[in-house]
Length: 115
Image (cartoon, rainbow, N blue to C red; front, side, top):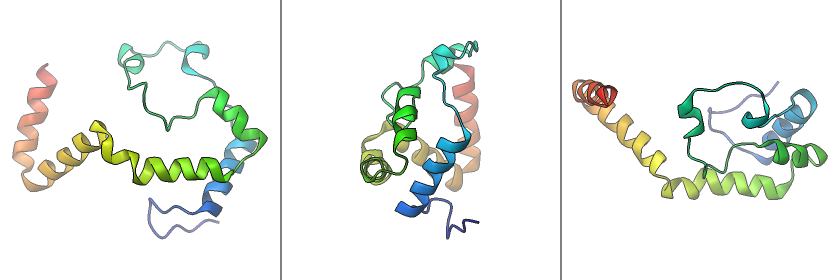
């Protein structure tokens, strides 16, 4: 059993445990090789998103789960790179607007859906 103090809790031990669970129980296949026809917006996703696990990276991870280098990369993306991501600021802004004025958020949602 793993008891996290909060949903975003991170420690090297939990990271190592998670990579071992992935390596022992899953197989990752890139979307292009899967044979599944995804909706068009799936392929338009931000290709610069470096936190996605690719098939090649998964194979490397399986050879040595829980390396300190990958953990350092996770911490970098979680605490530093996120500040330079437009996606982070858009979600943060949306949450802020939604919390302050739900009626304004609903109007914005309707305008965006019309496009």
